[in-house]
Image 1: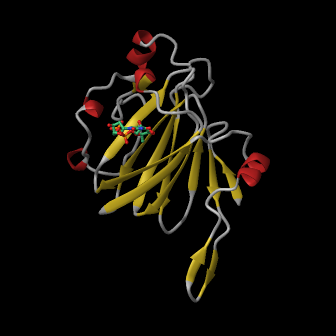
Image 2 (image 1 turned 60 degrees about the vertical axis):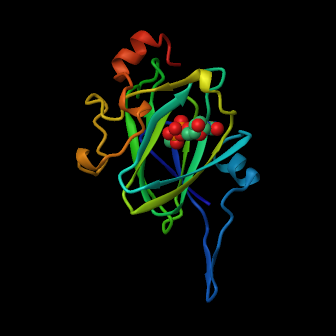
Length: 186
Ligand SMILES: Cc1cn([C@H]2C[C@H](O)[C@@H](COP(=O)(O)OP(=O)(O)O[C@H]3O[C@H](C)C(=O)[C@H](O)[C@H]3O)O2)c(=O)[nH]c1=O
């Protein structure tokens, strides 16, 4: 597995070693040993899967401490732009984001540590999205910020008219207000 640093400390891209042959391909999609050796010691406790059609945007979500989650995300089929936003108020990269294209072909994964909001948008007709979390779902501690907050400057690569969100994701605060009204994000 090859690890690629990003502009945000701790957010890394993982490129697994793919073994292709006349039958197709094989790769280890996750190894606790290699992850601990090359990324960090964390124990994932929950696997999630979601399927979304073209234009669906899920995010920008996070869980507040003590239920904050690190996530290891990947696309089984399709293409997404996956985004992590630093929401740690004391961080020198507070409010900065990385955006990475994850596809069923490039097999890339993104590790998003605790302290980041996460979301993705689907560029293909459909995307099958799978991810590991190192803390359980805690809806009472869910937080979110507006995916289209101008201060974040995220290029979702689609016309706004193509973006499809849940009713919930239509009404999240700007990061600036979330800091004010959510108190400490982190
Ligand atoms: C996240 C989650 C949801 N659910 C249930 C709750 C709802 O009845 C249903 C759909 O939930 P939601 O609309 O919050 O799903 P997403 O919009 O994909 O939320 C996720 O979107 C972004 C991309 C994230 O990184 C988070 O993991 C998560 O917030 O699944 C569960 O039972 N367990 C869970 O861990």
